[in-house]
Length: 163
Image 1 (cartoon, rainbow, N blue to C red):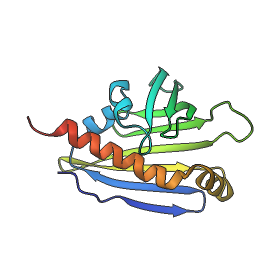
Image 2 (image 1 turned 45 degrees about the vertical axis):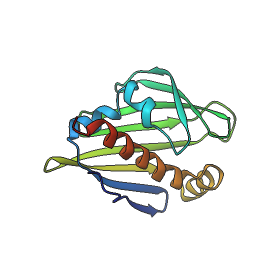
Image 3 (image 1 turned 60 degrees about the vertical axis):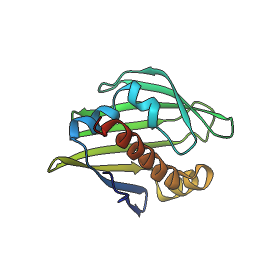
Image 4 (image 1 turned 90 degrees about the vertical axis):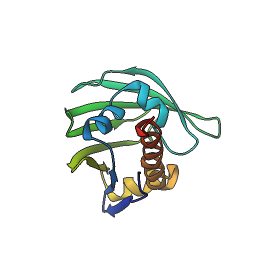
């Protein structure tokens, strides 16, 4: 059973989300790294995902489109900086190429084994407090992050139920 135990901490230019999942670390890492999983849960509520390309390796690029519930398509590009299977993923969101107001930030995803389960820690690190505030005001980044983790929890519950 996956409980709703999401903890969110906002400091200066960083948002940290922490949640315990009653699944092994290898499974949690896998759903963050394989396209067949990512398309099932990635993004806030109501969004769907189309992966254009995914090179899940250090220095690799992931290009995808998030289809919003309002019908708008959001182009995204991520570069993986440091992947340490199954401990962490560090990536840089390098914008969408749609102008001066690209959303640029780093995310560090940490997977901590706790007994038979896993603590997930997702940090979103912005260049400044002002940039975090801008992105949150324009895109609802903090609530979107909470929904993102919530959708991950729903997906894990679906795939980890005993048959």
